[in-house]
Image (tube, rainbow, N blue to C red; front, side, top):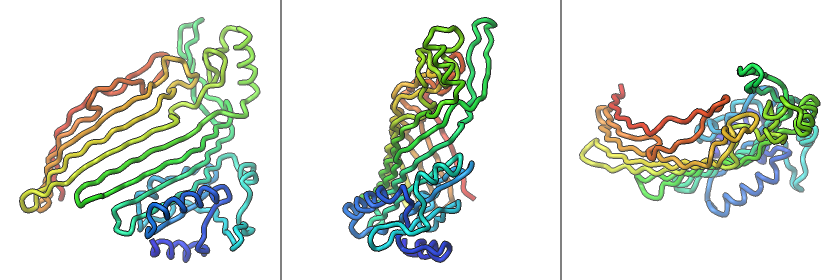
Length: 326
């Protein structure tokens, strides 16, 4: 990845070693791991910190490969020979105090010497102050749904994402994408603290609302599973001239998490495993392809949305598609 790296250094006037204040240790660990597993690999290390309401598109950066460039301005700290930061780098505490929303990240890409292995690891820290959250609950006195949108608390999230692609032999592609995260609300608004105290004291109309659970605890953030993973395989069989046959399958594993803001038990999405599979016949010469596939092939049922009542996912779906490329 020397070409892309050189371009980045010309555009941003960077030194060869790029690292953010919070990404230094993680970058060293990931880089060391990559060099152990892929001793002759090309490595690209990108560290960035986003402010305001922009959100990092690190997945898009990862998929752009050698021709990719970052989408947003970056805050770059530089290490000297002794491992100390230059003045351009600022302490994480100062960063967190300076703006309402921060997303420092570290992205490490590694490609094997023969191009058959590619590793993408992304560590992130996400903090939103006065996080605005819509919530709805059933008012038993009127039997109607009441919607509220408030700044209940700060939202903190940090974790690690990985993408590994392996081509052990020509035609066989194996990939694994996984994510680990820890999300929580912190620094509750005083009104939420008062609501929680009333809920614990047994005052009606205070539990199971906003980010306070039916038992008076602070809810977990919604749609934030601690672990998620997708593993997939496909193989391209070369048939007659210009014809290819490609079977594919992938397995998705999502750890259980809540969908409803107040973590009502009915809004819990259990740990689930779903499978997708397909068969594709291609003619490379004229651009025709015929695909037959299924999504959620085992017809797994789980909660995808919740508003007073739980709403389930789509059942198994079978598809047949004919496609022509012009």
